[in-house]
Length: 506
Image (cartoon, rainbow, N blue to C red; front, side, top):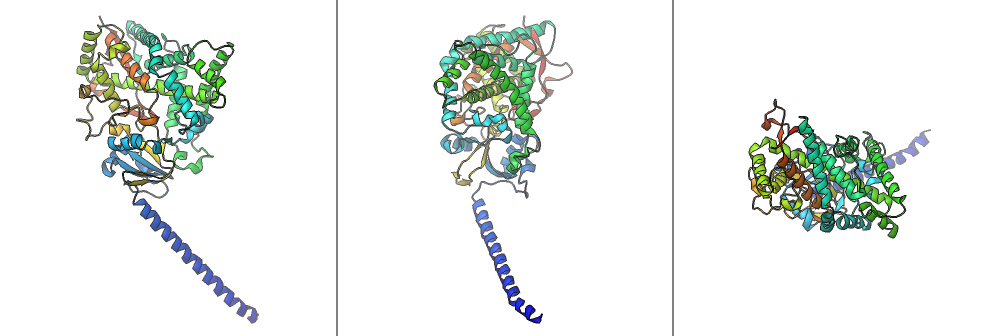
């Protein structure tokens, strides 16, 4: 027995030595790793202190565009945060945005795709979320050549005039009965039918009735779900669980919209030949000619992108514009005077009129400055480590460009919180992605492809509504006290819809 115990002692000591050496090695490796990480982190952009596990998530709140703008005042226009497991870069100045969106555009051109957008495989086929690749270029070519090119827009000009006339007719009917008009919903219906006629050669809702509610709710529900803070986006390890059910609910909403598109596509295919010469025809012909390049799945996702981007954003901008004008009666009077002088009271504003209405154009720009429809633009990411203004941006970093903060930057704008369209008179500043102090549509290769349509449609709709009606708000509310609360999602909508009574001009 003693013999056995005696034999075991050197073995025990040997194990102890091995364990001790392993422990020391582990501590040494961890120390080296920690030093390396600290050294590496020193080259990251500045940012707020991070808590264990959640990082800086607690600082976002329910208005991230505002929270991030406030943080940038302390940490600078190029700021680094850790949101859960995700490294995040926040850009909050025109100069930094120019670096990311123009000078180093290729390095920052990939999308950071939120988990919910994988519903129905949408991100796999969507021009908005695909990485820059052959399919993406094909889809962009379809849009740039067949939907948003100057020649296509000129050809479809009659459609835009017709839809604006229908909007005015709807408001005139409400005026006769002294009914309130939900400006956002009316503008949504107008934009919806414009797009559906451009793509499918038919209305998707009755232009003269308060209909289209189901489709608007589907789009609205999609925007809400896609814009919700989702734990999976901060902790990808939870992807399989989908703990909040956001991807599951979004899958239901997207599925219903795709069913509508499938019915319209099948209806066209059953005609036997393509003869409408609309966007659907162009897409179906392309599928027939190049089946290896583009599929029906790409086309369905393209249509979904177009309807989401072309309806919710346009209607939101119009709603914010009229809200600001009601809060600033002097500005509305000045706009009405310009309209009456240039085209005559009670007329529809046409596209060739807009060039002669500089103050109206200034109102649209000022609305987009203060209320960009996508305040953080669509998120990007870097596929491989990149240097930005001397900082190291690690591979996989999410990149947010705070267009809302840039539009209110006091170093770029005089009285930045004031609604003052006059600031644009004679300035030459534009929203087309060349002036980085005003980028509501983004810039670079991933600039919003619908920009050419938006800058035609919004002034037409706004000018026509102003030139045909006065607008009466609830007598219990003072104009300057109108609710300006924002509802943050992928788009920045009014939390409380603007409902006003149109008064037909004499």
